[in-house]
Image 1 (cartoon, rainbow, N blue to C red):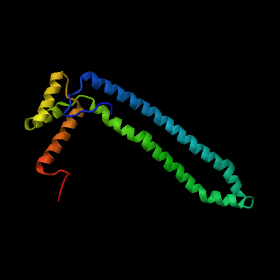
Image 2: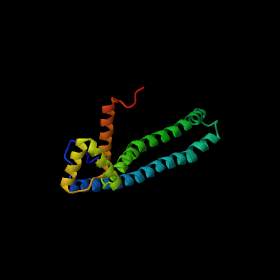
Image 3: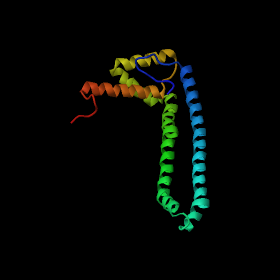
Image 4: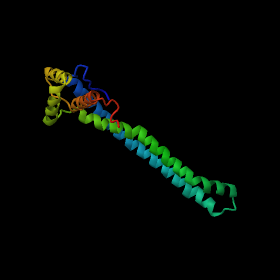
Length: 174
């Protein structure tokens, strides 16, 4: 992500948040173009594979006496080659398209203003924890609204702090 919120750092200015939002939106548009391009490449590979099978392999397989070694090799390797094409394309799609898409899909709402309900919940947490109240004061001194990503960061901080106070450092213990 281009911009991260931290309770110990100074809150970013509204201009920085707007710049980060435009950057993330541009990255999302580029990722959509890359997804279409990737789909076209995979379809071309599958079409080439199917064309080769229909024009070369199947006519040779009709007469197994012509090239028995080739017929046996194609008969045994075709399912593995099909499986290999599927696995490689699926793994590439996951690494190149899906993981960055999920990151961007969570980043876009994080740079938008939080709802009044979320801000009120954070105010309640600020009554108990001085760090949360200080962060809220720093945001209000900048003169901008609290962002959704900031509320999520503060809720995570409060949750970790409450777990630490209860003696639960690694989640639940039995």
